[in-house]
Each structure stands twice: as structure tokens, then as C-alpha cells.
Amino acid sequence: MKNTSNKFRGKNNKEYKKNSDFGHYSKNTNRSEKNDSFLNKSSKNKKVENLEKDYENNTFSSLKRRNSRFKSNNQFSKKNSDTHHELTNKRNFDDWIWGKHSVYEALSSDRAINRIWCTTEIFSSDKFYILLKDLKSKGVLIEEVSWNRLSQLTYGASHQGVALQLACSKTISLEQLIVFSKQNCPNPILIALDGITDPHNVGAIIRSAEAFDCKGVIIPQRRSAGLTGTVAKVAAGALEHLHVSRVVNLNRALEELKKNGFLVIGLSGDSQISISNFQEKAPLVVVVGSEDKGISLLSQKKCDFILSISLKGKTSSLNASVAAAISLFHLTGK
Image (cartoon, rainbow, N blue to C red; front, side, top):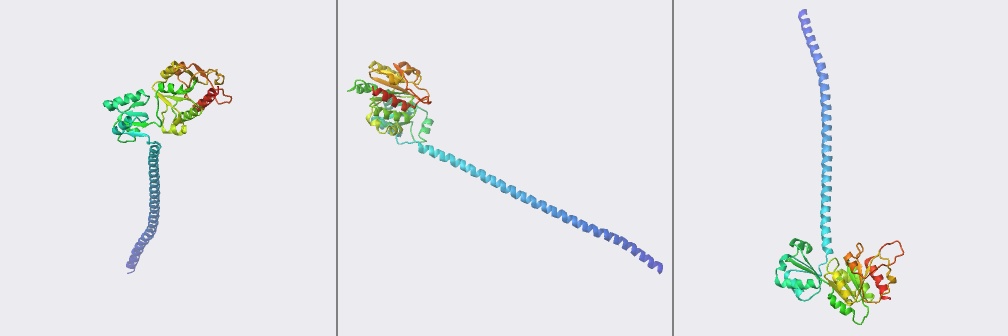
């Protein structure tokens, strides 16, 4: 009985020890596993939270970049559209006419024409061909362009292959200008423009010419601004009292003037002869060149005298319209 109890107690002790040992280790193991699993879960949760935050931040920043990019693209497109509208508004079409019927009526009514743009098909029409040939002989600039180029000039209008720009004043032929200038004036003065394409300069020269009792202005067909609305505005009414002749070729016009007793004077800063020392008494033609290139070489060969305006400051040249006004002041005061 004793042995049995001891055996039983021993077994129980062993089992208890085993169980206690098992229970001790299992208890500690479970606690550590729980702690580890909790730490792992918390670290995983933190990682997940961090990933979610990073995702949100990245998503927000990407959306912000998209919005800013979209905003910049919208601003860029808006800027382009505003620029296009601004360029469209800058072009004044008040003196423009396009379309076959409208242009033909304008040409038939003997209105003052500054420039004509047309396609090749227009010349195949007999009625247009005769009118255009006559206008070209009178100094009107006729430019043959493509259909697409004409659409660009008129901003997509229905031009039907032809468009024109009206002149703010009528021009007369060179022969008429010569006859008119010599009436009641033994020594008239004319001004010829060589390569002046700025309408503001042309308008200012016309204004000075009329103020100093110049008898007329000669403008070449090409390489010169025509009698546009800007020219008329800068001239401040001088075109109403001054004759303008538009010639096809300026050098031939100078030859014709020399045949009719005119002396041709060219203005150049390189000349050693000052205009203040010029004493010739005769009908004069003053040739004014552009500011960057001056008088062309062919025009210089046609000149009888090349004169300069004496400058005392450090500035080496003058504006074309200012040079024309100073030269007229010296020549009309003789």
C-alpha cells in the first residue's frame, strides 16, 4: 500500500514535475509568444500605418503635382489663346476688302489701293487681269500668294482667292507730280523714300514735307510702307495737302526727274559735304534711306550730290524722319 502510494505519488510527482515543467515552460513560452506576436502585430500595424500614410502622402503629392501640372497646362493654353486673340485684335481690317465681287467693285470704282494679294487663278479671269495690269503700272503692289497664305492673312475668311488693302489717300503718276511741282514754283523740292518700311517714319516724313512746303513725296512700290491708316494718323492730316506718287522702280524715277531738270541729293552720314554748305539753286529731289542700310548703292549712283548732317554729340546717326526734317529746314531756308 505504501509502495503503491509512493509509486503513485512518485508518478504524480514526475507527472506533476513534467507537467509543472511543461506548464512553466509552456506558460513562459506562451507569454513570450504572445508578447512577440503582440510586438510583431504592433510593428506590422505601425508598418501598415506608415505605408498607408506614405501612400496617402504620395497620392496627395501626386494629385497636387497633377493639379499644378493641369493648372499650368490650362494657363499655358489660356495664354496661347489670349495671345492669338491679341494678335487678331491688333490687325485692323477696316481698310481690307476680300472676295471676288467686293474686290472687283472696289477696283472698278477707282478707289485708292495700297496693296493686292491674289492667287494664280485670279489672273485667268480677263476682267481681273486688265484691272490688275493697269493698277500695277500705277505703282500698286500686287503680290501673288498661295491660297493658304491668303487664308493666314485674312485669318480664315472666305477670300475666294483675292484680297486688297485700301490706301488712305490717292496717288498720282510721276509725270503729274513733275508738272504740278513746277507750277508757280521755280525751284520745287521733292522727297524720295528709299527702303523706309516703317509706317511711322513714312507718316512723320510726310508731315515734315508738308510743313516745309515740299511739293510731293515719291514712294517706291516695293521695300517701302504704303499709305496705310497708320501713315495717315502719324501724318496728322498732311496727306490732304500733299501729293504722293508711287513708282514701280525708284532708280528709273530718279532718271526721269533728272531729265526734267531736277538735282538728286542723297543723305548719308559718310559724306564729307555738309548740307548747311550746299548752295545750289535748282529743283531738288532729296533721297532719304532707311536707318539700318541707308541709301542703296544703285540710288547713290543716281545722286548728283551726297550730303551729310553735321552732328556734334556722340550719337552717330539720326532717325530717318528727323534727318528728312533737318534737311528740308536747311534746303528751304536758302
